[in-house]
Image (cartoon, rainbow, N blue to C red; front, side, top):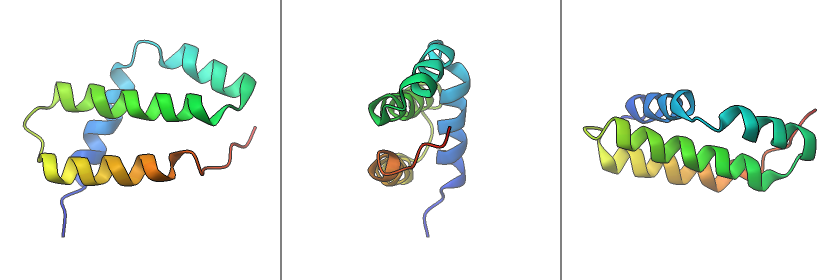
Length: 78
């Protein structure tokens, strides 16, 4: 079984550190464009792994890939 908890935490830290998150969220809200959601999620994963380089990269990559594969399939409710 993969240790996904550290990967999830790393991803959430990435969101917390994203300087453009507010602007991207507002754009997502106003347009409903799933490409913006994907951009937000990719940035969170990328920032998170930079901040926490000691994370298990196998688990991290698995979690990132699974998350992003479903990202554009999410329904946006507004």
